[in-house]
Image (tube, rainbow, N blue to C red; front, side, top):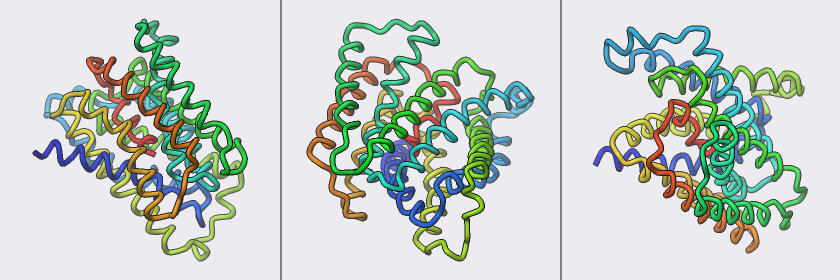
Length: 308
């Protein structure tokens, strides 16, 4: 019962982070907001993560320079480039459409796994990939939401997220999922802070000009959106079948679209909804086909961007 409750939290909370991002960037620069989110969440999580696991595991699983470098690469690709792209694009892109685009992450993961690890793609998976890419093509066309550039930025971030998730299995990272996630958050947060500085965003952060709803959105992203949902994901992953937990990949976008319509009054075009449905069908086929694959520590964070 606890495991299913944890999975329910992952479904709803990670899906709702797209709404929180959309509200947050109304008055907080996107890269700065994402950097603050992950720096605070990582700093809060790290002390608890260091104490996670058994006594023997805590003795042997002590992150050194190699582990920090490995998690820095993963954190940069997943959080700085992946989530940063979503945050940046949601200044103009509806939260529901962003979520549907991020749902393509498993498609890029399969392709990255083929290129990086040489993992064979069976005919059924190739068919699912073709379906998914067709759905992405439909979504990538502008359908009344302005320039196609934000859409391409989100797709680029999703590609980075999928590739980083595969690299997480090859790079030296902590064996304890919570510890790896905390380190990735800190590393990704630092990169986001640097990007916010280089782009001049930090110079435009004026706490006095930030609306109350944007502050609440940021607090939600730090607390429920990062710390609570991540903990629940680890619980669910440890107690439920991988195929069951992987359902977050196509439940989150549905939650985001529903909440976007309910809370923000978003109305996606029929073409966007059609493209999103095609992508979700493709993702479902891919995840069901690859269900026996084991999770790596990096997968804990890779759930969200869509942990957005």
